[in-house]
Image 1 (spheres, rainbow, N blue to C red):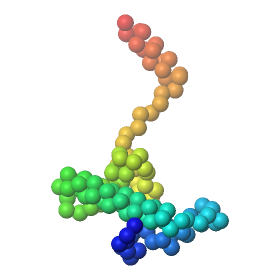
Image 2: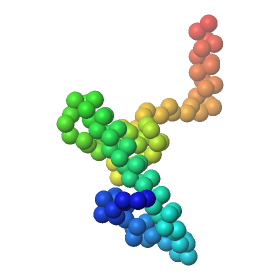
Image 3: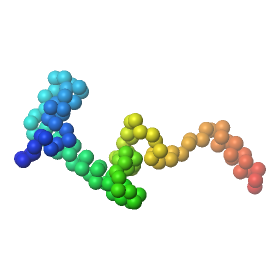
Image 4: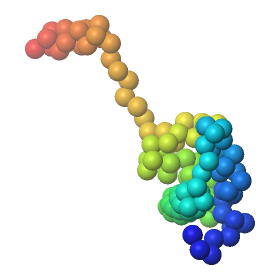
Length: 112
């Protein structure tokens, strides 16, 4: 990617190489692959920050908070953010046990 300054990227080529080595120490990333991955990381972060700022603005806040980013990542990418409380997570339905379903059916029958 021409004109790309490593200092402007959120992720450096050195850090990217280190991350790849953690997965497979024998793996070597081609220069073009590094550039594409760095561009993808920058684009992802830019879109996440932009959308998260939109959420903060929707809350009528001038401050971007972690919960704004958390909501964006969970709703748009189904990503959870370790280390943050699940207060922004959508409510999950509890699964009823078979015994509970049978009891509820009996209650419904008795009301008829």
